[in-house]
Image (cartoon, rainbow, N blue to C red):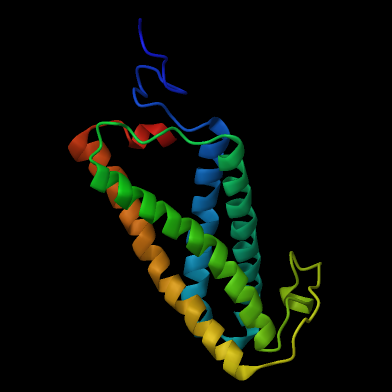
Length: 189
């Protein structure tokens, strides 16, 4: 008797594949993530007359990524991803799992820390940096420079780690596709 086929298994996806919704969440995250990283790296170099626009873009994209990440995790609970292919060595499975956990952690921690940092600096998302330029967020703490500084460093450290995590994720996908030729990348296409 043949074994049951894996979820989404076909000739192109012998190890199964992620659901269509999971794929959409994955690829919808890429653009905003690139923009939030680039805007975060360039804000300090902007002239004062455009700096607030970059802050607004950066903060709004951060909140969008937070929402997408929470929705992705909720979707994962409702529709679990396919199991790692059995032909992958356990160490490779652990590394992939660790990178995925770190990416999710960064995508949730970054905007939360950034939001708290903005408030600790005394600049809640209001006026020109309101959500979508419309929805002011209430000020929920008094300015606290020590806390702002600590949050700023946490936000920056995760911000520098994020491109490294993304690089590891992309390198892993390329390695699986070009060297191992095992179909891992195709599970998300």
